[in-house]
Length: 184
Image (cartoon, rainbow, N blue to C red; front, top):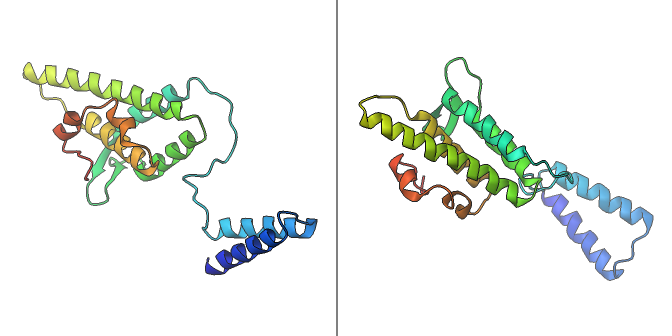
């Protein structure tokens, strides 16, 4: 990686000396060096936009439904800090989080906000139902709520999203109720 950085620095110095004019062989060299630099891990795939996309109106709803459908099937492993599949369910939480974060990065930031808004609506309505059932003496699990909040927190973290994306829709007291403050 150090050699790749050195080559990049030297090419930029040569480019500056020529005042931006490059012949075909130099353009090819720059393109090859950029490819090598990316292959060596010099790029940041989480901030890279891989393709230009057309608008997909239903994407936030589809992603939210996918996330919601898997949350009851997973459990949080505190030793790994990840959501993993229960017994026979194959699910790697960090892979799914980074995949969804990369997918959302390809679209307008409104898609991220819409996805978080739908997930937050699910969490708050599910929480109200859960609290009402507790008042009536029922004892159903709230793992789906907690897992959804964990997933949203991890998506915000790995996607380098502003905390306001989450806190615009999920009140802080709800995070505290499930022992999920931002310091974890």
